[in-house]
Image 1 (cartoon, rainbow, N blue to C red):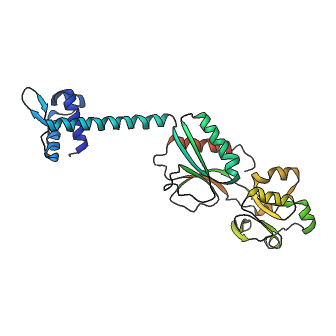
Image 2: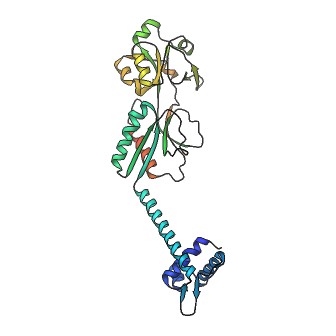
Image 3: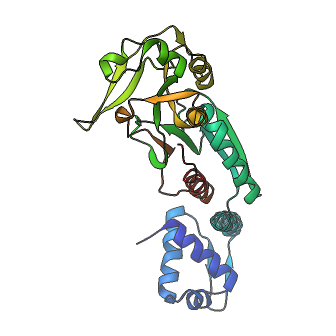
Length: 297
């Protein structure tokens, strides 16, 4: 079967070895196969590349131009292969990451800094945004996302579990009591975040539901919600890393632990793992290692 590029590589070998026989020997091919491929290449191009005589061969003027340009392309391909092989050995280049919120500030940023310190040929770009970026269109290597993933076209790798906690201050519960059921919870002042719904587990059904909540305080910032909870303004649902210190110190009290959702994973998502670069793969490995050591995620 004729392949234009394979024939071109044979042409380069013939020119540089000085004969069809020498080129065939170096490539462990028959002389007739090499000669036939060069002839098919000439027929494909509609030009004569090599003048053949019984004593020697010589490139035509057009053949020399063709050879020189193909030699340059072959050198460029060799350079690209060396770069790719070097990258397989050591991560390098820009690593562009989309992340949002306090989780990114508290865990992803330090991990990225540690990764860059370990691999000096990597450059980090951390983009903090609450919107769901298009990884392919906007040129991101990966994103850190939590909860149920919506985009099925992305490859996702679980890097941590994120526990959501319902809690409030002792002062609030002294005034209004502690709810023990979902219906009772709806009667309380809820400190509402960026979503108007809280996710809860129904233990007897082994399933989850989203319930609508309302209250006198709303903020799309976790630390703002935490500040309101500390002041006794209402009940809040926050990831455990926000509240673990307050819970340990008794400033906040966890309620309805049996309703705690169990599917709030944190994911590293990326467009494809077919040719996953070392920098992405190793960074995700580092994240998993770091986050597995955090007890209150």
